[in-house]
Image (cartoon, rainbow, N blue to C red):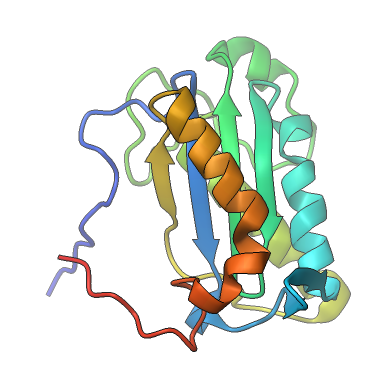
Length: 188
């Protein structure tokens, strides 16, 4: 029996095109591995510091990427990723030796056929970098849930709303959907 996971990506949307994306990446079983909220402030554990350092390093590995607001929470990461260009030849040429880049392809991202500089590739490499460092430095494994949530930021009003949401996330933890103490909403 063959199993096919339904994609949550927008059909026919080019996730390598210049745009702003709001990302949420959740830990396996929603475990609190990155830190804890104390008095409406996030206090990072060692794994949380690794997740933060790897997030900040994304533009060093992807010259076509800038980062907006982000926050490492106890069991998830929120961030804004901005893809600024899609000149894959320049991006590929500047890739560092020994990293896990794939050859550029001109088509939409497909399973098993990654596109360099695309959002799925950026997130996959970020998750792999955190997992690799956590394994090496903390003897940790199985950090992430499969997949991630993404939202294409459509306008300045959305940008401002998302930016404020990310910045205020620790102070709103008591109501956060990713907080296991809060009953989960069923999505249709």
